[in-house]
Length: 142
Image (cartoon, rainbow, N blue to C red; front, side):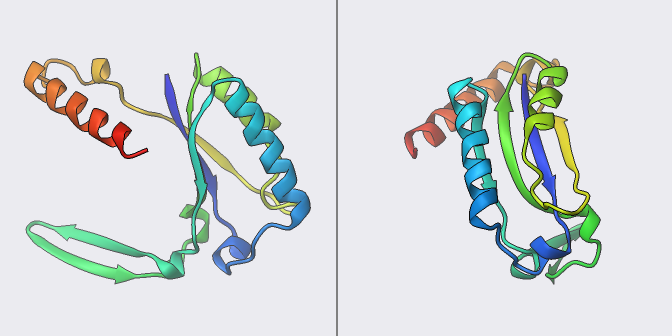
């Protein structure tokens, strides 16, 4: 099972405040544990929303909205992609994670990714083949 682990933003991450050396060291150790355990597939921190944009869809119309975005509690400051046996295992790993925003409350969201078998008959053999070709091509870029 694959899970996206979403680190929620706060006012400091949105202001571009970077972690100090102590937190970077703690996070580095935690990430090493994830890699050694075969859990971590990917993970990155994200720049503040002031450097981002949203594209709003309304029928065939597209509207670009430049950041920053007002609702900090709905924003993401970083993510991991993990492969674990269950949601419970993902929860246990997150509980071991250093607090990204020491001295404040923070939140990490855990969301399971759809796998091919979750989609059903609509995911035809042709679509599965296309998906496999794309994944293989993505894998070559690494």
